[in-house]
Length: 381
Image 1 (tube, rainbow, N blue to C red):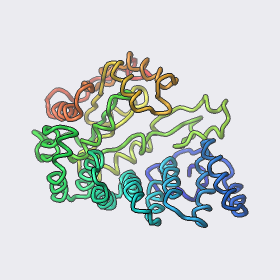
Image 2: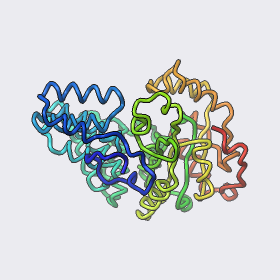
Image 3: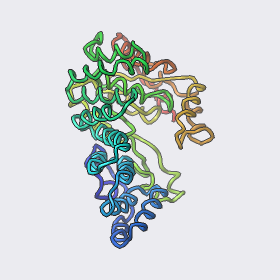
Image 4: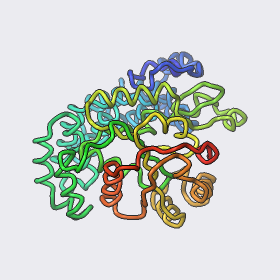
C-alpha cells in the first residue's frame, strides 16, 4: 500500500511495488475526531496546500460526515483523483444531491472518475447524463460518451449519440473527424496492432489524440493516470509528498517514471477488453524500456514554437511560461529523437483528426512496425 490511508480504493496502482511507508496518518485521524467544523476545514486546506493530500482527505472526510455538501464532495473527489482512488471519488459524488446549477459539474466529475476507474458501464451512463444535463456539452463530453459506450460494448448506442451530436462534432473537429468516428474500428483498412504506444513531448496533443481514438473504438491506457509514478530510492507514489514529506532535500531526488509492474498490469487489464489498446503518454527515457514490448510506437512531434504556444494556452502550474518545466519542455523538444525509439514520427501540428488519420495509416502501412532501437537516443531525458 502507498501509505496507510483507508480512503484509497483498489486500483491498478495497487500492483506490487516497494511503496514508501508514508507519514503517520493515524495522528491525523486522531486529531480529526476532536476538531470542530472550522478546525477540520482549516486543517484540510492546510494539508492540501502542503501537498499532503492523504491527510487532507482525512480531515475532509470527517468534515463531510458532519456537514455534507456538493462543493465539499467535489473537492474531496479531486483529492481522490490525485491519490488515484478513482472509484472512491466516484462513490463519494454519488452520495450528494447538488443544486440544479451544480448538477452538470458533479456529473461530469463523477463520469471522469468512473472512466479513470475503467468502470465502463457506469462511465457510459454518466457521460450520457452529462450530455442530457448540459445545454451545450462540448466535443470533449461527446467524445467521452461515445468512447465509454464503445468500451462498454454498446456500439449501437454509440452510433445514436454520434448521429444526435453530429453538428457539434462537425463544428469542433470537422466532417472528416465525424465520419472517422462514425466508421469506428469497422471502417479501418486493416486491423490495428493489439498493443501500441503513442508518445510525445508536453504539448504535442497526446491526450486529445487519445480521446478521438477512444471514440473510434480503441481502449486507451492513460499512462499518467494508470502507470506513471513518482519515485525515490525504488519507492513509488502518485504523490510527491509521500516520498518527500515536504523535505526539499528529498524533493530533489524524486523522478517521474513508469514502474514495470504497473505497465504490465495496465496493459493486461486493457487487453482483456478484446479491443486494440493504445498506451498514451510519456516520452524519452521514461518510455524507452517499454518500446520493445509493444507492437508499434508512434511519436508525435511539433516545432518548439507550437509547443510553446500550446503550453501557454494550457496554463499548467508546472509548465506555464517562466517555470522550469516550460523551459525543460522546450529544451527537450529540440533533442528528442523519434528514430531513437524505433517509432513512426507523426506531425502533431495539424488537426487532431488528421493526426489520428496519419496514425491509423501508419498502423496499416507495411514496413512501419517497430524498428531497431538506438539506446543512445532513446535514453535522452
